[in-house]
Amino acid sequence: MIKRKVRHTTLFKHMKIIRHFLLAFIAGMGFILLWSGIGRWGELNMTPGQAISVGLGLLLVSGFFTKIFLKNFS
Figure 1 (cartoon, rainbow, N blue to C red):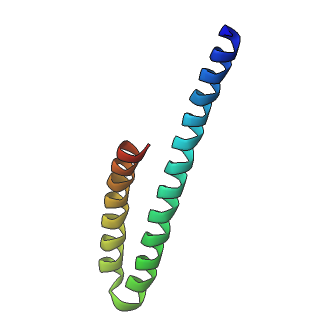
Figure 2 (tube, one colour):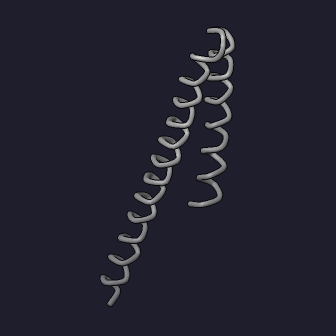
Figure 3 (cartoon, helix red, strand yellow):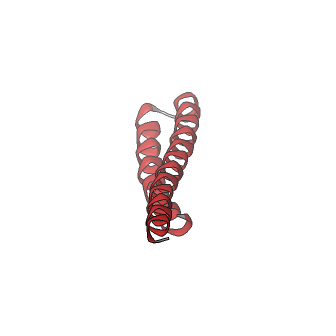
């Protein structure tokens, strides 16, 4: 009985780690795709300096959003 409970607890710890990794990966990829799409739009409609500043701002904000997302939902 004790061995089964230990195995069960260990399995759930591993599942929690995997879930955190997957949520981080999905959130990160979503923000990267958003950043890429806005960056491409900016390349067509802005000067290079404006596009770089918007891209860096989005990258910074997406990092904060990813951190908040992981803290709240995992």
